[in-house]
Length: 470
Image 1 (cartoon, one colour):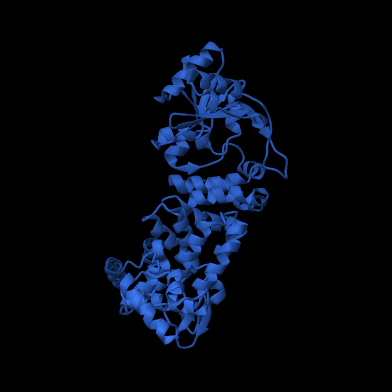
Image 2 (cartoon, helix red, strand yellow):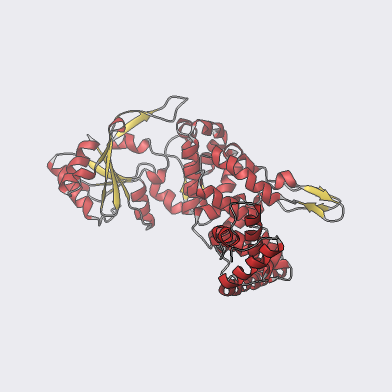
């Protein structure tokens, strides 16, 4: 019989308590799956034939964590944190569903009932915790074989599984993406047939699964599954609109959907920053609305970065993503993403680099990561030239940063100082002088230095006919 080593001492504690209380319990689901896959997992689900809340309280008391137990009476579950693990206890149950809700009707059941209600065979695996079967595997749906074959498959009829709880369609794709597995043919067909059912799931739950797909090592796999199943058009129509290639006068543009997925995969090799990955997804989102054919220049997308920036808030609102600094960060990166590319193609001037660093501020490094990921040319010689030019831009930024300290630039002369020197109240002239100092620094006319800026302030004031108090 298949047996796994449960090394964490919490399992020994649970085993001792259930023996004393004459209960039967199992560790089940993702922890067991990842134990087999040798993946780290600190979320432990315990199923007991009986009262899950009562067992949780007894285990928590034994481990000195009774005050930390969170009880969810409506769901019959309780959980607490032990060391670096989150442990949840629930009574074994069976479920049934109503058509218009993914919330199940629950009643007590056996371990077999509990395994049947799980989403995928790889998550039905359970290990005994009683003395007689400690660490022994219960695998009624051949989950071990599906792990070996790298298959995502539902334990029961996939159509019923996804109709009952449509979020499981997103989870199937997420697991395939995270684990590098394939979705079994009938299971994927059931996703396609039930795609409309995703509409009864909250936007927050959908976005949570989507973010996990985005944070995987190769997110394009998940987005292709979403696209091929028809889910993408429902949950993220703005991205789906990037698909397709138009041809006119034997000229065509690249498919911006697959280009975006390539950029996303590229950037995922460089960063785990979720919102920078989101910026990669959104950087060309305005292209379908700015696409034009010019007889001389072919297909153009002028102004797409500005329109993409304007579209982002509606996407974040619709997907219930945070309408805060995360969104503004994405907007900033997207609005500037074409600037370094232009610099890399032309002779780079100091003033152009200063302006880019000034506008990007602390996001300049992230911006450059996106821009390099945006180079997806199949022409290796062209790609190498772009990347070489980018290295020149990076060096130029470093040199100017060391010399002029433009990143997160703060004017060396404040508006208050200007008003005091010229004995002014808040007025248009103060703004003119402040802006003139900023422009002079960015253009390299003066250094980012207080003394030089002060002299320049006096000069501009004189040009405006202002007199100092001295």
